Amino acid sequence: MTIRGSRELLRLALRRDRLMLPVWLYAVAGSTLATLVAFQRLYATEADRTGFALSINDSGSLRALYGSVFDPTSIGGLTAWRMLVAGAVLTGLMSQLLVVRHSRAEEESGRLELVGAGAVGRGAALTAAVTTAALANLAIALVVGAGLTALGQPAAGSFALGLAFAGVGLCFAGVAAVTAQFTETARGANVLTGALLAAAFLTRAAGDGAGPDGARRLSWLSPIGWAEQIRPYGGDRWWPLALLLTVAALLLGWAAVLGNRRDLGAALLAPKPGPAAAGPRLRSTRALAWRLERGAFLGWALGFTTGGLVVGGVSNGVLDMIRGSDQLRQIIERMGGQQRAVDAYLAAILGVFGMVASVYAVQAVLRMRAEESSGRAEPLLATPVSRLRWAGGHLVHPVLGSAVLLAAGGAATGIGAGAAVGDPVGRLGRCLVAALVQLPAVWVMAGFAMAVVGLLPRREAAVWGVNALVLLIGYLGPTLDLNHWVMDLTPFQHLPRLPGGSLQWAPLVWLTLLATGLAGTGLAGLRRRDVG
Image (cartoon, rainbow, N blue to C red; front, side, top):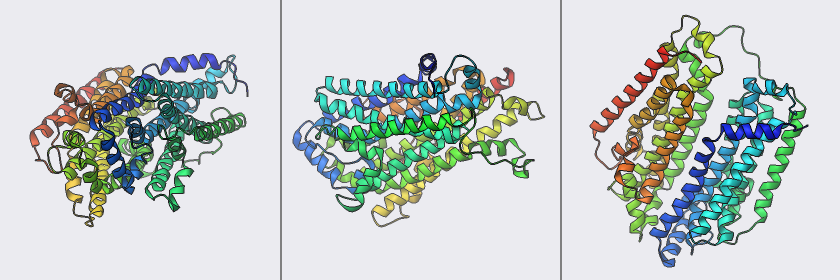
């Protein structure tokens, strides 16, 4: 497989991702550095750090969620505990999206066939895609390592943490390169790789939460578990990094072999032929939109349900975490309100669920733009189907689908929290209401996405930028104690803090009206502009 022309395709990929890559870099490296600064304020003495770390390592639920603390005496050790798993998941997701975007997605759209008609080798696209992901992971490793070192942490541990992120990212770049050979669509490759990433997280969680013996060996079956065993600031073991890089190299080599054995645009797993005519359940715009969205929606629903059970199950350990730490208690109160500690924790977690649900809502809205830019919407709109009817079929998912996701996450959180105290259904209703309260803010983000699609369709990348900004403010703002006017930029800041707080209807009504106005503006723009 020749790679002639890969340098030019790499330059093109970096140009296309010139906005996306800085956002990923800021999300991983920025949150890691901000976490270090927050821990420096929270645990100024070694005794405070040691006590906090012991409470974490004694809780199986918290180990399952975040992993173990390998160095309980240093700020760097606490930062590695808090961010290693989250950073590994983010870099894995980033690498997956980059590789699929510049390989299988290019084949699916037909652009790669056009490019391949020139002096471009068969393996150039995959090489450029993997190199883009590798450069992004290297940038994250360097910024994390240099940033933590500049903030006073040991250089070896700092770069070990950054390289742990990059190692997992490269491993899942290899996974994505392989799945792109088996599936015919970019969506299929992303779903399959995302499922493997989720399985890696859950396997590690089961192993870490099981205790020092027995099932804890499960964590060794997960690349994220290998990254944990690098133990930044807690020994700085480098051989697990070599294991990650070896597996990544083997996967990339396998992908190259598979890519050389298939036809361009085809897949090793041949798709099943569909029926000659659509069934009665596929004869409306809503049915078509559901058919396009159902795989992603079911994956999101599984993630919300599983996540709710996990975070609800650890709620009983919150009291141990904040005991003796006024700073941590204040952070939880800023996120979840002034109510009891457990209620404040649940309110904070369900607020995070709301922000994550906004990602799904934005993704569902932008599915419209993907159908339009791929040319599939134009033949549909050439029939008696109106633009508003077509858009309305797609908007069902960000409006009602996000409600179902939040209901699933809230119910699972309530069941998990109740099970931790021996009352599985006692907190279900309160957590369900608290989750559904997030809907108006989610709809605001979906309305903004619709406004961009309707008025400025070529600026769809700005939607993700705004969504990332909202997530970062909501996630890091309480920890960094940002000014209230900065926090007020996110619609989630204006919601009632439930459970435990009082239900106020005014902000819910105003946010719903704002979402309606944004969506209406976008629909009006869609009616007037050219399609495509």
